[in-house]
Length: 518
Image 1 (cartoon, rainbow, N blue to C red):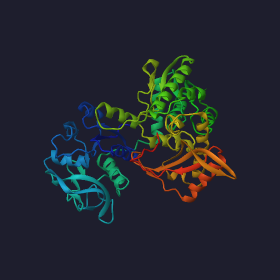
Image 2 (tube, one colour):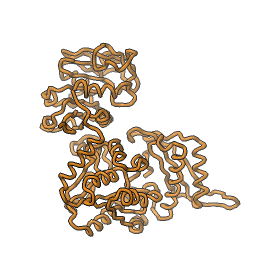
Image 3 (cartoon, rainbow, N blue to C red):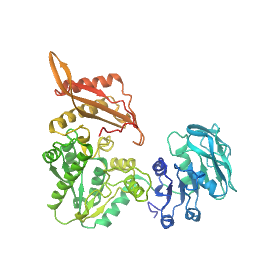
Image 4 (cartoon, rainbow, N blue to C red):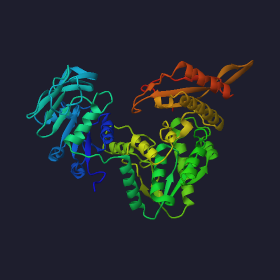
């Protein structure tokens, strides 16, 4: 019987911002893929034993003597290779071709002209050309021996190359981004037709594999999970409940900084509907007391993290024979931690799960999602029976409303913000706009503004609305919501919440602004 991981591709990361997209696109076609840094221990490349290797783009230049090299072990594998952008240039240079810096750089849209009828590009266009996404200053000016040009652009005569006999390919453009026409199909062709991979990486197979592994690891032991109500921990709870039933115990810490009625919804979803053992720790007063008088965003985060661990540990201490701790670690967390260890310039989220709890808890970690990207986690959640409205909710910060209340956090401001946020999200859903924006929320501003309600003067706080559109959350633009919609939301918030005098709409993009205000 074929294993879930038997057919797999290795993505070697040279520092491109799109590397994770390559892995996700490959997985969308049913093939397991994994990312390793380009300076990884060569033994790991051999041990991974991939059916093919994809070399990512990157910010370095092959014309620079300090540029990253392709490890010799990649060539020794004797498997198909696909170089993208920097990956193509590195292949060309190392195999005997020439790469030069060019004054005619290409960034963004370009037309790729297919030069060879039978090639990796065959069948991707009926017009003989593709609209692709370029991002390069250097270009290949001389092919290595054995290669032919299979694609060109106005500023890159060698925009795609191939050595069919050795199954080595190079693309100057980025097939992994949605802007490239036929890019996903190209990666599928490489994975299946050229590397010979099957399609075992499916939600059903992933769930079955995770259940088997969890049962093997845990045996008859008890597993503790900190359930936040977020997507990752929710999917872990549903998955482990299916795997080990009552051996799973969840602790839900209600810090008083959640969305409106969220605590009740979590308990109903898991304890009532799914039959999961959930202990609810009502700790609102404790968190608010700890936050009293603290306006600094980073110190607020640390206070919340420290208090959460204290409450969680106190609850765990009341349980007997707990040997395992489950976490919602996902694959980007693992990549980012590995990147930090190897000195790569990846930005690490300050609240991801890797290493998030103290060692003195002395419990063995269970991390059933650590191979999965966020979109795969969501797909699994639906397959496991979680409500789609929960699985596909917009991101919510770990510190909750505390970083959406500018300055000191008080119960009164948290209650106002909760109500305003509920109105905003409710109206987005009514207008069929919720799934059209990537993230939307409200912010409590610690300034009072004069308003007039009826014949009375109101001097009260201001609420800001924030909605953004993004693909990867690395960059984002403010959502162009209809004026009539914004007016309706503003009217409801001011009319239904007596302590708000004014509503404003945030039109800042990222960069230079961040998505969250704190």
